[in-house]
Image (cartoon, rainbow, N blue to C red; front, side, top):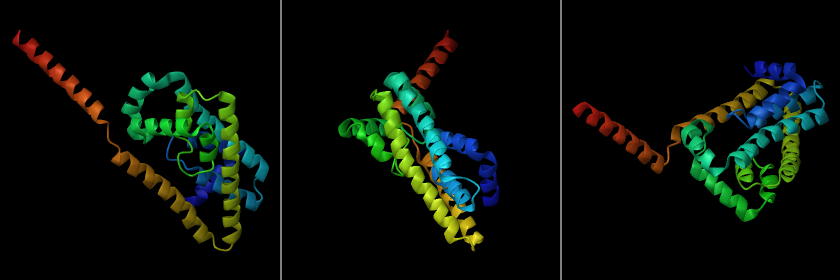
Length: 222
């Protein structure tokens, strides 16, 4: 399976890397660690070049994050909240998490976007609060690009190191790749399973069902 993944990324080339990095920031659970890490393996093998891979992958990251920024900036709280309540399970996020992230963003300022891009946590989630707070678009793009450039460079170099270190042990390298993919999938499934709707949403749904039942009962009595 690992060979198929490597070959698929290799055949897709830089365009494939760009599209995968866009999707990685839009649709969980595709991990950037796998995409750019395998890109690093291909650099070590001489099948890709470091700088084109870094720049194109980072552009994909920026486009994917901009989508969430645009949603927050254009839709706002009123339109976004019911969507998160309905589809939050598959996005593995709830409204409270977005509110907390928004408060964190407001408390610490725009620099949070830059700092979290070089972190394995909340790298994508922070884009939504940035949009909700109407952070200046150009500033958001610059901070996103700069931070993602550093993060992706580390992933590529990590992939290069793994490729060189395990050059004579392809079996171990295969296990590492499959392990990273497995952890990403397991983490996504765990978040989906433990997700629960807000109490207020459950109460609204219960009230709606109760009203429908009462209406049906009145109609039957008439």
